[in-house]
Structure formats: C-alpha cells, structure tokens
Length: 208
Image 1 (cartoon, one colour):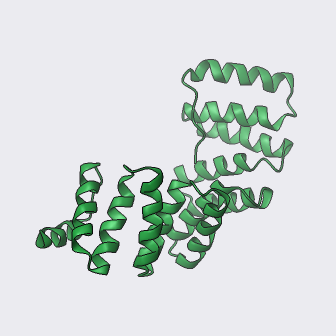
Image 2: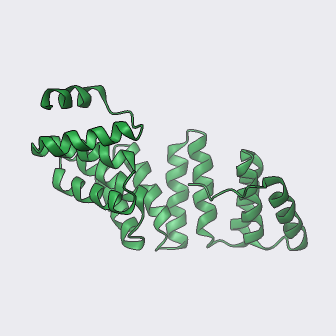
Image 3: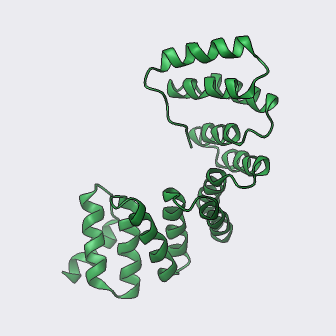
C-alpha cells in the first residue's frame, strides 16, 4: 500500500518540504512529502501531511490509500478498510483501493465482499498481481478450485516466480485431484521460499 520510496530519502524530503512551504495549499506536495516520511517510518508526521493533502485535494485517492496503510501498520484493519473505501469514493476506478478493500474484507472473513472488491480491482487493472493472488485465495476459501486456478494462472502469466500463486495452485490442484500439477506447484512455491502449510507438504509427500 506504499508508494515506492526514493533512494535518497533525506534529499527527497528536503525538496518536498520546500515545495510545501512555497505552496502550502498544494495537496500533491503534501502527499509527496508524506511518501518520503513513510520511507523513514515517520508514520505520525506522514499522517499529518496526508491529512493536509486530502484537506487541499479531497479527491487525491492515493493519500487515502497511504492513510489506510498507516492504519494497517498500527493493526487497525477497520481503519484501513474505511480509508480505502474513501479512496474509491474519491476515484471510482482506483484499482489499488479496490484491491486493498478486498484484502481487508478477506482478513475480516467477509469472503463475498472481498471477491466483489477484488473483481473490480482487476477490471480497473488487469495486471494487478496482488489482487489476482488475493482473489485466488478467496476462491479457495469458498471451495471454488477452478476459479482459483484461473486467477493464479493469471498471476504467473504476469510474474512466473510469484510464490503465493504457486502455493494456491498446489492447493487448488489437490482439490481437483490433479496430483502431478499439485506436486509441481508445491515444489515451485518451496523453491521460491514460500512457507507452505505443513499439512499440504505432508499430503504432497504421499503423492510422490
């Protein structure tokens, strides 16, 4: 949920502090400063700048997402969900906001709501890897192996070495009884460093 942080963070922060001083009513300047502060894990200061950003620019959807990220860092899942809902109210087609809503709803056990949000995320960005991966997981929870496989295959089409997708494929193929594919994807997930559940590893071992 965090924008990529510049390499020279101190220089970046100094530049955007100056921009804010020159034009304190520019929401984007406050937002850019907040991104730098997040890079130094100065969450309280970043939150102040993000609130300033949306005060100046109420439709700056990225700022709501960053505030949601700060909430998540603090363990406030409901706060994260609410800020991302505000993000998509500010910009209906904001894929990252919908993806984050889906993640939060899934964490809360609201699988149907998660799937609805994640489907919107991939409509607005059909290369949104994390949304596809979360959607695949949601489908697994619902016992929809075919749909889960389709979502995970889309992930590895975009990024072949995305470990959670291989893990989800292993589980889904186990459910479908396609043991060779289950073993293949489980091995790949392990190779990529994914912590596959012990019960899955145990089941896979019986199939070799």
